Amino acid sequence: MNIAIITACPSGVANSILAAGLLEQASVKLGWNAKIECQSSVIESTTLSSSDIEQADAIIIAANTSVDTSRFVGKKVYQADIKAVTQDATAFLENAVQQATELVQATTLEAKTETSSGVKKIVAITACPTGVAHTFMAAEALEEEGKRRGHQIKVETRGSVGAKNQLTEQEIAEADLVIIAADIEVPLDRFNGKKMYRTKTGPALKKTSEEMEKAFEQATTYEHSGSASSAATEEKKGVYKHLMTGVSHMLPVVVAGGLIIALSFVFGIEAFKEEGTLAAALMNIGGGSAFALMIPVLAGFIAFSIADRPGLAPGLVGGMLASSTGAGFLGGIAAGFIAGYSAKLLAEKVSLPQSMEALKPILIIPFVGTLITGLAMVYIVGGPVAGIMTALTDFLNNMGSDSAVLLGIILGAMMCFDLGGPVNKAAYAFGVGLLASQTYAPMAAIMAAGMVPALGMGLATFIAKNKFEQSEREAGKASFVLGLCFISEGAIPFAAKDPMRVIPACMAGGALTGALSMLFGAQLMAPHGGLFVLLIPNAITPVLMYLVAIAAGTAVTGFGYAFLKGREDAKQVTA
Image 1 (tube, rainbow, N blue to C red):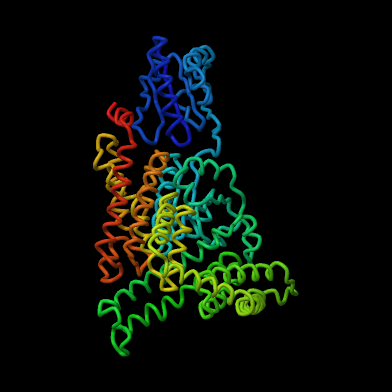
Image 2: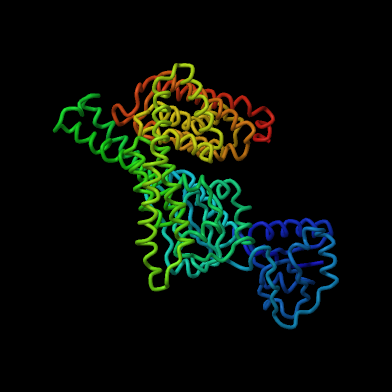
């Protein structure tokens, strides 16, 4: 018997190819001669010729998307959902031939997909606290998954260099779905009235397919309000997200200030004390101005995350008071939350006549919110928190070698536990905050340990090549480069595939590096940049022992994972 088969699904990927393969095997089993047209977006498809159609005793269409049947008029045709093929392809073919009927006029099979019919237009935004790795890796993962499913997708990245690949008004208007994968606050007013699904960069990167399925199933219509109150409840924003929003906006100020301070040391460690010199000017720019803005920016954008623009002014003022009273980054965090929730409460509870409602965000909330925050910082929060900060700073600066090593172990292990996740970011925020108190050792340990996972995975793929596939070895090269840049997320592909061995190996190496960095008394002026910070004289001290700490941790992680990745893995790769 001669048959012609057409398989098709909306994305032209999984179902279409799978069904074609099953039906081909079934036709061979039955001894039938089958010509197959697999409508796919990823493999080259052979279209049924006029001769194939003419010679076929039956035309069998397995599809859950529309198929043009005009060319089959006058032939015996059987149409069914593509899912029926997976149950029993042989029985499906036998039943199809028996029930095929002559096609009088062209018809189409209605699309029956789990989430959508046909090609959808998707727009997305990705953003993470540092605006470096997770932002762009999540964007790439979403783009690949969207294209794999046959949809049109565009992702705007809101990274450390600002918004890139920005969405236009027309693209947003035409979009069927909006996906927001962000760990920090991003402006959403332009998506008012659109179907929106919110997640974080971690799931978007590591569980992309699942998240896109959830996006189609769980997306709800987004309604933007003038204040952030309803949005905050709807989006289930938490303390961590507010804190990371503040840290992400503070980070460029800290990096710039730290590097400029390091530049002033080029002329001598105490050269800045001489008035009128370039060293003094650099110290004034970096320490007197940039570092002075750290705490106000942190507090201001924590408040912004909570209450939108009305919270910014109270937060900035509260942060300045935290800085001037000596409350440091702990006081700045407290000021940000006091200002944010005060502004949010005022936005929700204060009712004004309609004619005066416009005054709330520009007059009432900033004035009352700033007053509440300022008084709270001066009379309640400032003094006690300043005492805590002084005690913490004195402890860190005067700790013995045993305590320093223990702190280094804890911070190093935290940096390697979830590779850019909440634990990693908590350790990082701790180190960045201490820079405002001229405490530089924890930041050195944190950056050194954060480089270890990606460097270690790169080393493992080099020393145990036979245990890794070619794609993994290529990923290892990229991971090593990312590690040099202090982007620990380079190890994520390995951790996602083999977490039970990758994570312990990374934590062991990171803990060792953190301990050695603290033991050697390493200090880091800038909180990012990896080994490229070495290009700035005195940004890292002592350089040689700092490199020894990083190399030791990298060796432990690299050799450790190469050993843990046992022989059975090698057999699977070479099979």
